Image (cartoon, rainbow, N blue to C red; front, side):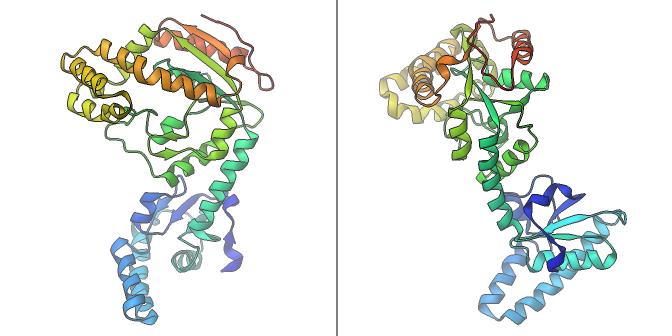
Length: 360
């Protein structure tokens, strides 16, 4: 089957990508838009591993062949039945070994030009790490900076609507990037899945055009940003949002409605901050939550925790912040950010840093 193998750089050339690993392996990470047609389910995969160690290689392979044959037959009947003759699938397993070869042999015997990913998922992971590093160095980032509640994510979404290239890292990470940034009923992906999704998006960008992204620290929730990417962001030109505090509080109250409706969850979420701020301040926050004085509560969090932390971090890491394009914002309405995005799209240059200027 050696002549039927391809490398990870050829992934996008195929009609469909089939991951034949177990559902558990697939759930942790997989090539974006691949489908999972396991030749062994989780229980079968585990049982065969036990047979290898507790009985013999022969017994394990004989049992495995039975399970693989049954599962491939089921996939042909249920999922692949309507694929036409010109269909060209790419198949991969953990190392590009027995599981992917078993599926490929059957598909090729039928008449489909099935290929195997050389080195399997393990090689794909090496490719992901390498390509993120390569693309991070090639892409031209413009980083949107601003204190918590300034509207950075909102501006990114509007820039995307203006057909600008946008890398929304918090969207990929399923997290808003702060201690209160988790999203209900939408857990974060695994680190590997995040990196797979990240590379998938980065490969779509034109390196001759600017990519807009939001200022981040090294971690978004539990996700660690690749060193090469965060280093390039820190060296990139900036757009600084200077949003009035009253408008920031209004925006945050709107975006964190889920926590306001769950006071006990909110209390638990801010408890880690008490270690740095002290018991007296923490008790004041709890009192504001009890009184449902949300404006004062958000104001307190910004004044005591978020603003000092953000200012220290942004000044330390973003080298060109003082040269950045300054936007003074008095309200965070949809109309305001639509106009800002349109203005940036019109004045943005792919080769030069936007000069410092106030638009509002």
